[in-house]
Length: 192
Image (cartoon, rainbow, N blue to C red):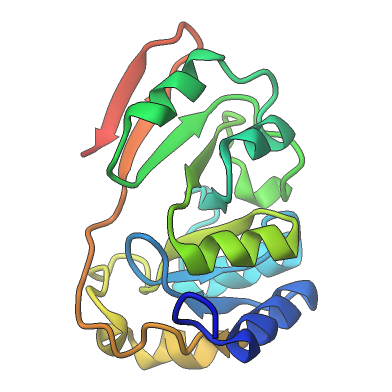
């Protein structure tokens, strides 16, 4: 047992991701649907499960700031200082996404990335050695479920693996803040 989650649970999630499957898992915000962010087929399955138009990009989670350099072409160095100042989970929309599934990147070349602070997610991403998709565990247009017990059975039965860790946790966290990091170094708040 590590940090409250079992090695068996972690291994099952990793195996699912490595095999191109999709998982339902707890994050540092809400429960998420995830997959290998470099696998177009897995990303497409998430769009289908959520009944979501693929023109609305999904976000990805990374385990550390240095990983940004692999998935964003020439990020503004000031973003690293900014990341040090935030305490609330914050997704930043970056220009010039690279190394990700094409259907994950918005039409304008942007991608939303959050550096996770959740122990389970950090371990999962580090051990998987790739970013993972994180989108709320709901059908598009429906409310974001506040906890595991509120997730639609269509979502639960539509994924390949449901992480056991924190299923009984009644606490709920709001979705992340979303900020667009503009090319000129300014920020645009999309969601607080």
